[in-house]
Each structure stands twice: as C-alpha cells, then as structure tokens.
Image (cartoon, rainbow, N blue to C red; front, top):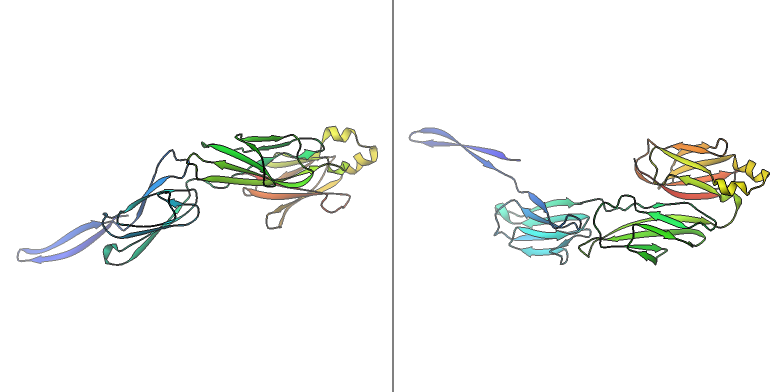
Length: 283
C-alpha cells in the first residue's frame, strides 16, 4: 500500500503543496527453484546497505544453512515447507522487525488405508500426491517396509492395531512431508468382518459386513450382524454422528463435517467398541 505525504512549502513566490508517495517497509517473497522444495527469495522493500538480522522458525533454512543470518544484504534465500521468517533492521533510524508466515503448500500428507480382514493385504494410498518427489518411504510401526511408490501393497500385515506412515522426500533433498494413519488387522472373530468405505470419504460413509465373510457365518451370527451401532468421534473424542444399521448396512451423512481425521466405533449387541477405525473426511 502506498501512502501520500503532503507538506506546505512557503516561498517568496507563494505557498505550494508538495506531495510525495512513500511505501511502508514490507517483505517481498519470490518463489524459486521448481516450486516443490519450498525454495524462495525474500527481500525487504528498502535499498540494501542497512544491517539485517534474519531468523526462521519451523523447518525453514536460510541459504540452506541454519536459521539465523546477520548481513547487510536485504534479500535471502530460504528452503522449507512451514515456518516464519523475521527480519530486524535499523532502517529509518530505529530498529524494526518484520514477519512473514511461509507455507508454500500444505505440509500434512493424507493417506487412505483400506480395511483388513483375516489374510487380506494392507493397501495404503497417497490420494493427492500432485507434486514432484525424489522418493517415498513407507513404515509400519517405524519399520521400513517399502520405498519409491505412491501405493503400498503389503501382503502380510501384523494382527492388531498398528501405525502406517509415509515420508515423501522432495527434490531439494532436505524437505520431507509426512503423513500417518492407523490400521487394524482383524485376525479372528466373525463380528469383525465389517467394511467401512470410502476412506477418505466426502458425502457419505458406508458400513456393512464383508459379503464373502458373511456367507461363512451361521444363521445366529448373521442375525446378530444385522443390528449394530456406529459412532463417529473427532480427534478430541467428541461424538459427532451416531446411527443404527438397517439390514446389514449403515450410511452416515458426512457432508457437514470439515476435512479432518475421525474415529469410528462399531458396537454389536451392546458390546463396547468391538471395532475402532480411523477414517479421513475430505470435503
């Protein structure tokens, strides 16, 4: 924003109004590189020659070397995905500090995990990987299981609840975007043969027994599977949605929910949380 300063100037020839346009100090960000590494040049909107002290927070690096820099140059190069740049200068006769929040793209990485029943494999996908990368590392409970692919297909996942994590290495070689989720492999129990889809979900979240597993159940077990209750909680533990099945199936309307991670609990015959699964809502 440009400000106009006016001053009356009195001379022997008369009184004149002198107008001068001035711009306040500002930080000017110019993206650099291929745009995927969080590379940019940041300049102070005044001539160089003053003393500048630059500081960065988050994962930002200044000139790829630490997070502080003292210089008489009014521009610096930064690399990173998330943080704040601050510059303190003695321009204009007094110390002045300017701040800029730098987030070239969302740092959070969402991954979608399929449900697992019995001997079924683990299938995990990064649905919105729309930027260049050098490598992808997949971990299950901190153990590296695969590299270099956007979809993990793991034939023999461990029983019980576990964490799966993806780390995407960007082309600059120093910046990593991380996402994680939890899966549970149901190795036993007829009542755990439930499918929750799609994941991520948008308008609706569908729940139903696995049709192939349902064929193997007794008449008593099938009857029990018809009546169950599903409860959806946010990450703080607040109950947001609740519903009961209708002939094996249940649909939860998630159109009003914000994009985030949620947890769904399923009860059969009043049992306590016999199934608990993390789901992603993307609206």
